[in-house]
Image (cartoon, rainbow, N blue to C red; front, top):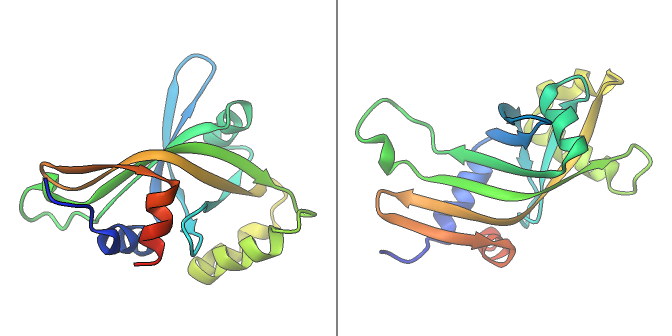
Length: 157
């Protein structure tokens, strides 16, 4: 197995904006797609979610979630060679009066400017996902355990 390439991991986190969010409902798990923006040091990922959505109701009841993202599939070659990352961690709501709110909102809108109008809707709220552990697969037969320290190191790559 080859060593972890922190620059490739950083490119994946900075280059994607669409991820699969896994939450736990009352009776079964639930997976959906959400937009995200990574903080500069990868200590958190910012989400802007509607409280009307099932995944949001699930994560408010159980804040331990999983987030998965992948390199884009261009339809060529073996998709198992695509870099992919699955993270487990905790989500917390960021209230409008939280001192971090404006900074996180600005970060989110810098990367996803078309979301500006959704900040006007009362059911949409900012959430911050704090990764605790995970698995990074650089391609077939090359995978690495991920933790917060490895994410921080990748952010500096």
